[in-house]
Image 1 (cartoon, helix red, strand yellow):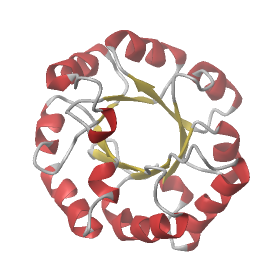
Image 2 (tube, helix red, strand yellow; image 1 turned 30 degrees about the vertical axis):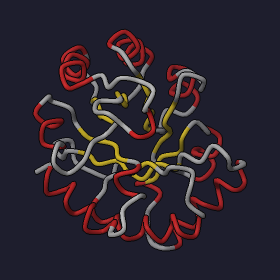
Image 3 (cartoon, one colour; image 1 turned 90 degrees about the vertical axis):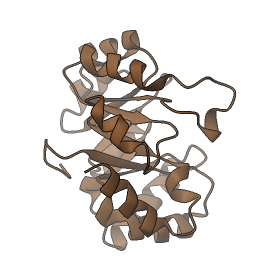
Length: 204
C-alpha cells in the first residue's frame, strides 16, 4: 500500500473535466503529497482509462497509488492498488472474492450503507458529503456529527469527502476519520502543488 496504517490519507479524485494531458501534468505535481489518486473518468472507455493510468505511470506515479473508479476489470488488468465502488457498481463481496488483492473502497452516504459495505468486505468507505460542496449544491451537507457516527460504527477506515479544504481538514481528522478525499479543491486550483502542501500540513 501507499502508506502506513498511522498516516492520515489524502485521496485526490479526478473530476472528469480536465483534458487528460492536463490532468496527468497536475497529478505529477501533487503526487508527493497525496496517498492515492483516483481515476474517476466516467466518460472514458476501458481502453482510454487504461491509457490514462499508463500516462500516470509514465510520469512516475506508481500503480500502488492509483485507484480506479467503478471499473474493476481495468483496475485488475493494469495492476492498480484498488477500485472505488459506487451504488451501481459490483458488490464489494463479489469483487473481493474474485480479486482478493484489490483494495476495495465503497462510496456510502449513511451509517446503514457503511455497515453494509463493511460486512460485504470493503477495505474502507468513502463517506460524504461532509461540508457544502459545489458538486452537490442541491443536497444538504451531512456534517461532522454524521461523519463521526459512521467512524464509530465501523472497524474499517472511513475517508471523508465533500467540501474539505486545508482550513477544515483538521476538524475531519478529529472525528477519527482516517483520511480525506478532495476533488475540486485540487483541480480547480491555480497553484495545485501549494494547495496539496496545505492539505497535508492541515492534516498533521
